[in-house]
Length: 221
Image (cartoon, rainbow, N blue to C red; front, side):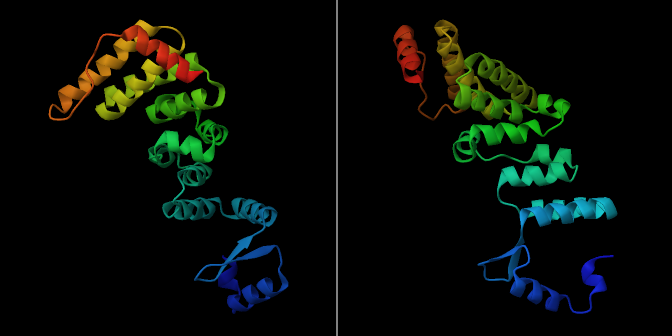
């Protein structure tokens, strides 16, 4: 039974808690909102986990339904044990996610997925590949992860994201000195984009592969 079901006047208790400032902060919003102190919130969640774990999971899923931030939404869903829903959450453009949240935070949330799920989802391989570049400039790891993402996106029929992963494969190849392979990969991806959208202006393979390789490698230093 919830506290609100046992208390005849729950609003009075909230008034008293707010007046006394008992481990809460008042949020400046149009509607009345109180934010619990982190320690108190953790204690209450632990207590509810012991008394009614199903209800705690339900509450976390309810909050996740209206949470605009993908990192927090995924965390809530994973805490609720809803791994499929967490895996299906569409991350905003991963490059923007890493810039705004940081590579470390992004890799941390990816690490919360069970290994079998983490290794099966191309979205997570793609994010990990970008983070490997952004955090450690680890181009061999980036190459491996982007190749996996490209293959799995292609197997799923997601051509657009497979081509995006292929472009990052080309960047990683050039960065580690495999320039001819990187240029061929880049030109192949560009040619596929042109075939899919013949009315659009697309870059075609051109001479000067060596120059492109040198310029790209310099920009990555």
